[in-house]
Image 1 (cartoon, rainbow, N blue to C red):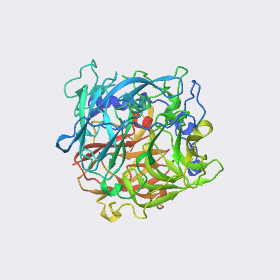
Image 2 (image 1 turned 60 degrees about the vertical axis):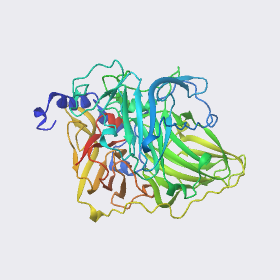
Image 3 (image 1 turned 180 degrees about the horizontal axis):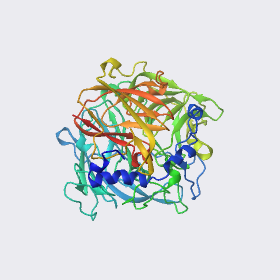
Image 4 (image 1 turned 45 degrees about the vertical axis):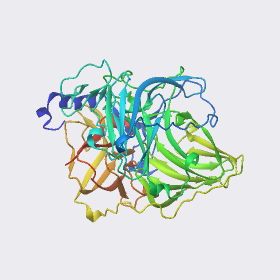
Length: 537
């Protein structure tokens, strides 16, 4: 505890105790991730987390058709604002063939319905919470005013949830005097004055983000504009959103998750073997296990999101005769690159998005292309497959110049440089996931910056940490003192720090004033303390 801990209010003091006692023994993570020496850190990074094993019968790969999430229709468009309504509710769905799985959903589907919007045209989404616990909605990657950003204590309370003391949120000993709670419904307004890209929305409730996403609370949100439409990239049915996630299933089809409190009401955290992250043994794409999709022998645009809690992937497109197809990257988390980048394989950490073009024209009709995960083993090595069914005309193209509106911040523009560490730590007899040695506390401001300031952040990790900043996009300046890697191109909002690695990012804090967050997007790390407050003044 800090030397000033005793001066803090009871609720604030309690959060540190709660985070660390509930995570007791976590430095065993050094053993179970295999990180024992500097030499080990320099080798290919190990998996983060421990894998659950399904007890339900699993289908063979590449049998289930790839679902495409439905696009939500607005309930109104008056006044230049598109208005949507989404009900968060429990349902059951057939994920594994012939078996029903209970889910928490947006509008009854997993993934939730996709929202498609135009750059600069505001969207308001009214969320109604019919789940048994409070929820929060965060539009990941959105340039959003703080009131609609989905701060972890700004809850939508379900009917019948115990009343709270005025102006305070209380859960597990935590109080946040700035919490803004609503009952049953909340309107989130997204200006969407930002570059066209793939965003995603998910639950962001404090201490319980990981199990809520695991149960199904995730969906896609696409932003488009005229300039992107004019590029001639593959479109219509040849543009595919691909939300990749992993899960494990009990014998009765229920989703397995090692929560300390299966009701997700009071006690946060997971059982000790899973403190470094929860991995499933079933790979889902758009909610289907190892699906297959029929394609023409033409270019396709793949809008890929890693929505897994903790699993990292290294994606590769391989034909059945062993040829590797290029993954042509045209966009990153925050939109189009300046120019395409060609990859033979592509690492993708939790919450990262990649905008890819794959050309199937060289694959014979009847041929198959598998998307494999080079970091997986056994069943988790397969992701999905494409089967080429016919020749067709292809009017698409991949221009040499994709975008001219990327920010050109230089290191010399930065008004300050910050050093931030993302590490497991020991405190008060227990262990947690910490930023600069401290667990998340909504009553504390960790970083204060001024609207319009350019800053360089130097981030250092012990194990794998995908670090996400709310509100802003950033550029990766360096890794380990060397230039960024090819997949770091463009404007990002999540950077995958590898074990033992230091990376530099540069950003400008523009958009809106208010209270925002930065955190690790390994969802178990986030729930167990690895989150901090960013105040833009």
